[in-house]
Image (cartoon, rainbow, N blue to C red; front, side, top):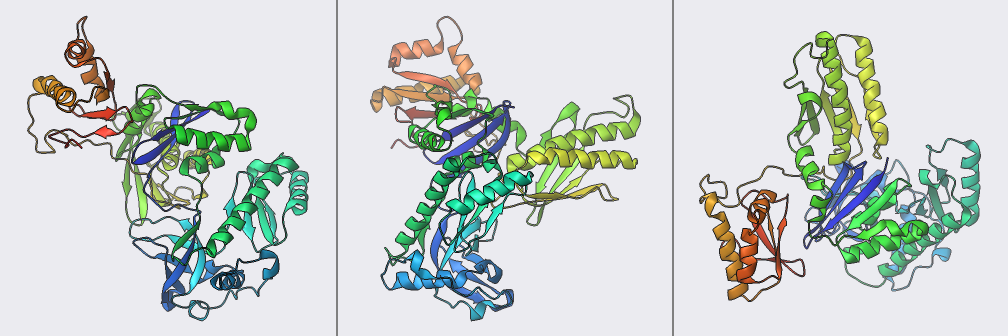
Length: 524
């Protein structure tokens, strides 16, 4: 299997697509203005104590206060309290002089531990989901590719996925000799087989991040304050996924490409050449066939093998998936209704595992498979689903089929599921159902080009249109495009863009920023 990472950076958002053997496996997008991410550490302030919940709400600067349960304060909460007390006096906290404070009582209560208005050092473990604010913990951690470092604990744990006893012992002994006093370390699975130099370099980097976070605490009286920001989504995804199967990383933004190249140079300097700055004329997702896959893979209905399809519904409490045989007929595969149901269900198991990972669906997932009478077929379906989910990085649990033919899956949820709207509203009629004749659309385009070049003096730009429209205006020996170039100059291009609907168009300048036109958009 070969993997490719495609990164599309626009003026408003960043989108990432992970392709495995050219098939879209993971997709993430986030607005560039969004401030919250799992892993960020804040110096925040307790806003309200909830005695009945044994928890408190904390102001971290979001529109909804974050939730912090007593059990998430962590056993070293009092040590963090002492650190903040030193910072409040205007002194830079000295880690080596801090000392280990008594551990927090696990049977204690929130009202006897924190007070309203108190400063706390917290880390986001779950982003805001639906009507809920972020979920917090006071047990801080700094994640790297090979290691996770945790302040104020001396424990060393090795990933349970590393099975060899000799390797587990080697890694534990190696980390014990490398780590600074007063920090704990979790050794991740990808650290298997790594030498002392790689692990030592990353551990030093993680410890430096912790020291820099402490320095920021005493620099500003602002509350809440971001004291440590997790790496960008592109680098975070790369940190968790990067492996020898990566063949290329394409980025359409030079600054982001440089950031990713710097990270690859740090973790795998011999493979820095796989990071490439994409400069093609087509939108980067169109060039790598990502747009088409997004439109076919997202939505309420998802079709898979031989006309069968899934119906995926999202509710506040869970996700529900219904398996339908579609236009298949009983006996199509020569084995009767039972064999037909088994084949549809096995295909659904493959697609459901793909969809859970692609949409990053978490929480409780209920799957309604087609009923099967044979116990061995039900067991076969359960084993197929377990096998497919082995590729999923998120923690999950799968239960066998119930007597009603339902399968229950729980999957780790740290952010909202990835929802992409694939239905398109007509940009011309805005959903009213009436539009100007499509035969006049080329005249509208020419009018806009004329307005842009003659009225506003813009000579270099790119006109993005639907691929069908691009094919129409470019057809013939003397095409419409050729005629327009003769009239309005040769400094502009027509670009087919699969993300646009049929009669939609957009103008972009040389700097990549959209040019807003009179009518649907106003000239800026």
